[in-house]
Image 1 (tube, rainbow, N blue to C red):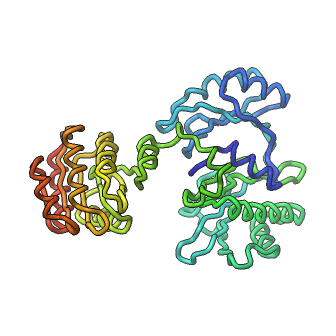
Image 2: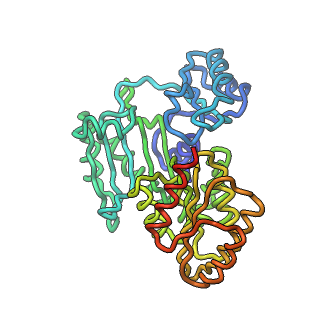
Image 3: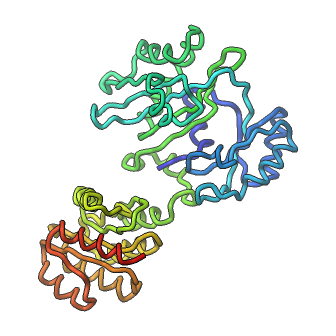
Length: 379
């Protein structure tokens, strides 16, 4: 789950990380009122769950109240990568001397949280990693004892030379690490972490992603979820208890089990295809889940064929087959579908599927190859 910048800054501020004062506005009038309150130049920043807001024109400097009014009018309602801007953050503009980067993610190889810092802030960290990797310092934290003071100091000393700024940055890094654990984050990031002319170190941006598996104990943060800023298909899938991630390919995939779903997608790529999604219906045999899965995939206009791969253990193949028939009767798909059903009640399933005369395959390799071939026919 992602939270907006203004929400992340509220969490940062509560933890003691210095951020510029600001407020969120949903109307031009509210944005103007905030600009008048600060009585100095402000930043008007779109609040949507995508990167590249600045490049899209969604982040603007306003030297006075009238400029804030103009930018609020232009940004509210703006489309940024398919999302409509419904809120803007109006925050005091800060004079910047330098920009740095601080971020924390989980490293699955070491099974530890990794803190990354770079004196090259204000740009995508991926770009820094590709072009100037020597400007990035990484440190895997032992979760047993957490981030210790001298470790935070070493990271901060990679960013600054002034002992006063090193001390401030070390304190911010330790507090950021505390937030990372406290809110079950999968990512926490400040880009940029800036210094001001009077030597202060301030977080003028904030990014925070929460691990969905921890939301049951993060009730307050769960209430921050903005469904309007999320992919509609992913929202529908989550409500139906489906694991779904939208991708950019042409082969729609419906599979049971995350491991089998990943293996299926890998094989699609291996044979020259491109999966349009990750979709795991889980261990349920509820035909309605199959119908919902089909509805979600058919909504994607890039999909040219649908690959259904079910290995029935707890999941009963006949129930999945009934869901496929329901989907055919209700949704009337116009793109080809190829099915592999093996395991519990597969013979019953094959009899049920005769009603809709679908392409079928007995092996994983064959079902993938057929799905790719069928997608090549549909242009």
